[in-house]
Length: 175
Length: 275
Image (cartoon, rainbow over all chains, first blue to last red; front, side, top):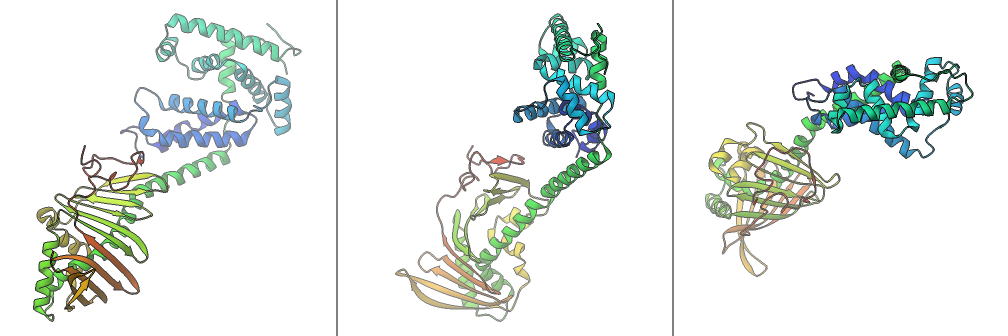
């Protein structure tokens, strides 16, 4: 199956599966089953919408936007939403796998922080740090000025820091 | 765990690392790849085979029912052991029947309720059953499935429409070619007179055509076929024909809901003839 003479679906899967799975798994961690189901849903949705993949969007950006929506749907559908505090997250991670690494535990904390951020802040941070988009590109996609995006990014980082600080209060915090 | 408040750069590093902290296991990748591969194969098979196969099957059913009508023509052309006057008369009836703008048949085939519409100017045909509605013209064919409220539209493959239909527009010659009846010979036809619903009619009985037993009732005054009955290997088709001045203009008038999902559209004329 070709995408307008560009990449086939199989090629898109081969190139981006690892990245998309890791993103989804991080956002729904430590629920590995949900990570599998949602990643599968992402690629099935991509298969359905393959013809809508245009040249201006990279497949990874497109897939990530689908994944982001799937994760948001998942959280909405699961009213409990999983553990909200850092301590709960740490406990859950320990229960799920005794082999959980420090990096995964840190990732779990960051996941919870991102989840508690306003969605437009978390999306800005993801675009900036995961997608690696420039401020100009972020501004173009949102129909905003670069200055407005820079200000919003600044507020997003401040909010991130604040939640992170609150969530890890009692730990050995260093400024 | 030691935590520290990150600066701007640190936030970026934390998020990037976090987004890569849960790579897929080999089994997760294999499982998902397996599901997607199966889905791709299913879609490919559905696109490649399913509509054509189902349409072919359905058209075979329609052809079987309608073959009764062309039997007379084929017998006249091929058989040397028949009663000439009866064949000649039935041929005239058949020719006269197809001068109608539309032929409408309804009845059953092998216990399944069936409605058929044939229009010759230009050629188009619809078949309506409880399970599906389908139709075709010279360039496209469609299949509507009520269960999924989906219409699948395909271009008619090159060579699928016989040249003689393209050139002559003759439904009967077309069906003749499609069903392969032209290879048959040795059938017999007998003629008798009767009365149907108070109207004088002619009854043509045909036997010896691949084991088929066919009975064609003709309105003597109008000189058009009104009933066709056929039995073959325990399967039975009964169709009643009338000749209205108008038929379905497009698939929607044939009964396809206007909000049905269209899987593939190539701009077929049959879709919306009136628009």
